Length: 178
Image (tube, rainbow, N blue to C red):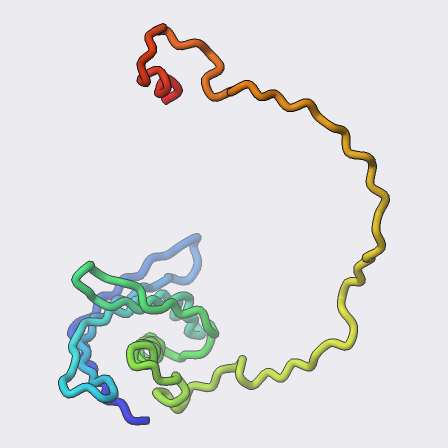
C-alpha cells in the first residue's frame, strides 16, 4: 500500500505557565502545510494541519494532551486527540512528529504502524485470556411481586390548569406559560 503524504512546518508558537507551584506546563501549536495523493487520484490535495501539544518538560518529558486539527472552509475541525502513553516521548519534537503521523494515518486511512514503523501499540501486544467464571453471580429466580395498586386516572387536561387572565377565546392564551 503506497501513499504520498508530504508536510512542511510553517510556524510554531510556544507558551509555558506555572500551575500550582509545580513544574511549568507548556503548550505548543504548530501549523503544517500538507500535500497528499489519495490512491487512484490524479491530482494532489493540499491543506493545513494544526497540532497542539500540552506537556511538561521537567526531569522526564511528560506528554499530557495533543490535538490534531485540519483547516476547512468551516474553520478548524478536530481530527483526533492524543490519549496514549504520557511517557512515550523524550521531547516536544518527537511528540509533535507522532501526532503528524497520526494525521497522515487518519487522512489516508493507513494504519499508524505502517506510517510510523517505530510505533508499537501496547494494546496490540496484550493477550487477555477469557475469564472462566464471571465476576458477579446473578440470581435469576423470580422474586415475589406485590399486587400493583390500580390508580384512578384523571382524564382532565392539566395543560392549562390556571384560567387565563383574558377570557377571550383566542389561541394566544395557550402561550401564557411561556
